[in-house]
Amino acid sequence: MYEHLHLSELQHKIAAFEDQQAYKELFMRLQPKLVQFAKTICQQKEAAEEVVSDVFVRVWQKRKTLDHIQNLKLYLYIATRNVSLNYLRVERKHQTLQMDELQVEIAAFNASPAQLMMTAELQQQIARAVEELPTQCKIIFKLVKEDGLKQKEVAELLHLQPKTVENQLAIAVRKIGVALRQFAPARTKTVKKPA
Image 1 (cartoon, rainbow, N blue to C red):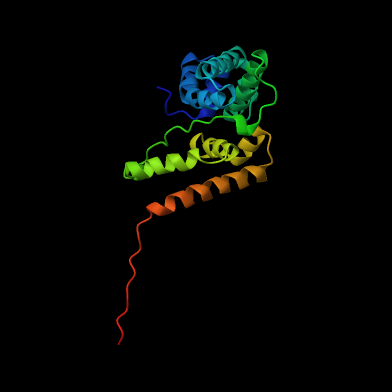
Image 2 (cartoon, helix red, strand yellow):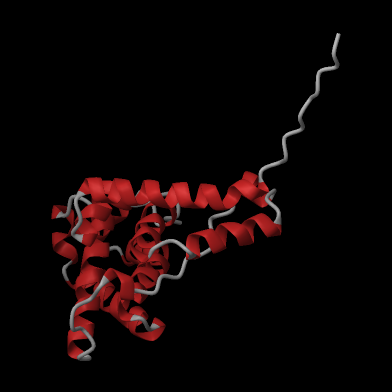
């Protein structure tokens, strides 16, 4: 029923009309990606699901103020990050969270017709190439390419300079490209016969 609505329309329906269907649609759209993100911090799927549930409960509790939020998607990512870090503090696991200590799961790419035509071997090579990226590159690549956040939003979310995000994304794309070159079709050389 609300699948066609833009995020801002769902946001307004929740804030202005306390629309539970709009809230459910918002949850269905963003919960899986937020859980993946929370898992990079919490390191446990159950904890990540609990964190995201808490975030959505707070959204419902503060629904009347939702119209004041400029970018709801970024707001939810930041809230998820903050609740995840609070969870770690409570669990006494959070000393200093280093990017290199995070484990990132890369979900499958959304399949477009072109991607469906890729061979299974190429898909495996892409997954391997992404998995071999340095942790910060991997997180940034996932947030931009998979979760659809803008580079500026990722910079804000991860407390990085926008140029750092841009550079890390370029490194990720370059390393994936290098890893995939071996799968490029071999170019046939044409030899000219002497005249």
